[in-house]
Amino acid sequence: MYLAAQPDRLCSVREIAEYYGISRNHLVKVAHRLSQLGYIQSTKGKGGGIKLAHDPSELKIGALIRALEPGMELVECFNPATSTCKITSSCQLKHFLFEANSAFVDSLNRRTLADAVPDKAKFQNLF
Image 1 (cartoon, rainbow, N blue to C red):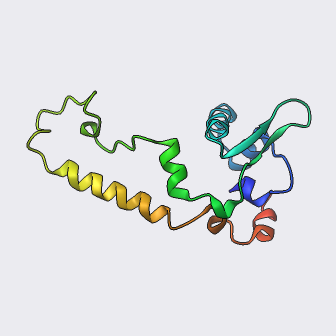
Image 2: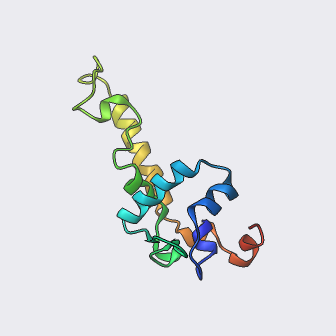
């Protein structure tokens, strides 16, 4: 959202971390992953920073969440390779949870990053 509100300039990870009051080290990892996935462009060195790689209206929130959390494993049995659940073969709850998880992502895909920052000017005044 920060980058969507600041489309005409490079932003630093430090300034974003300070604004939101979150760990800079954590945000470095998130930014690196978003760069690998093609969501942001990253420029290193003096005068470097990050910016969105696409128009915010093209970035579906559900797709972004799926890209960052591909497994979206709400419960252990969603991953058969690591599941130690003893009732997996007879349990139906996992199907309900999988359906709910899919509905969650589908709902988010009806929105874009632009929807989350509808008035850039108002949002920028917060910085």
